[in-house]
Length: 157
Image (cartoon, rainbow, N blue to C red; front, side, top):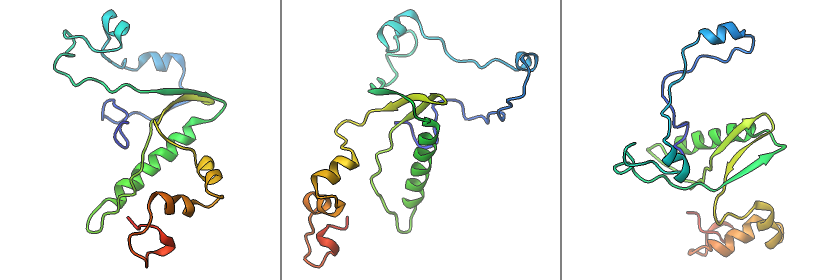
């Protein structure tokens, strides 16, 4: 997944969205330049040697779900906030790593978009159903306390 707050694009600030801009105003804006992949890259999904693919690291394949009927812009905002909190909690002098697995969300329209698949993930409802509706039972099973005095019988780390 991309780093927190990273969209993979340019770091230059984007102008604010203006929903009242006319087509003439939009035509006056400078075009956005982006590298155009070769037909070989499009066919294989990988960069070619001519495009720097031989020296560039191999891209990690993404498994994606196309989701329709939900506003993924909200999901994207929540992911951004989780990423921000994760970074803030890891700041010294007393860093706390909650081991968040932050997956990518890419809204493509108001009610649809792409969501990265997290292999091996289990939904919260499935965990609760399998452990009597109490998340502490799951944690006792998968992270039992080594010390008898640990709260709830769960290892604090």
